[in-house]
Length: 202
Image 1 (tube, one colour):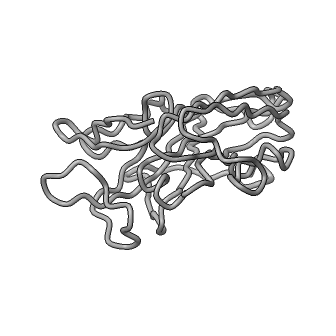
Image 2 (cartoon, one colour):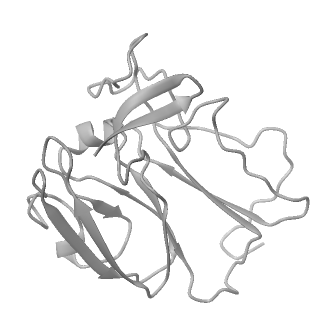
Image 3 (cartoon, helix red, strand yellow):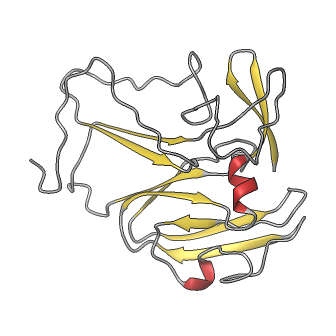
């Protein structure tokens, strides 16, 4: 649906999103959960949702016109599947996706492991990166832009409006980053000394 998002104090954007927000809400589940997600289309065009990286039946994969019918204006489609693995995933349209993602339709999808003892952390953060081009004085992103962006938000917020990630000294922290932009989005954790755990946990 169309949403208004405050990118920074005093700076609003007219975007598209889910549940009244852009990016959409972070969906958090546990490996083995059975999900049923109702998607009602309040856009001026058809849409769908693709569950990026999630193992699921083809008919639930969300590619409009290929694995499912398009979700028409004012219509509802029900996605239903069992989560077969844990990890960090995303969701976004696969229906006029260049326009719809450029308008902010995306979200994080976190599946926690069934075994709570598997790689436990004290703090678990998720953010999704986006990029927009706004002409001065406007609030509508230029959806045809492919390279010349001037706004680089985390969870659709830019400094000084970005959420903080509070942790205690000695905490084990997981930061989940997702990038659905049209370009690379290099970042770093400024001023911190930290150790990155590899696949074997060392």
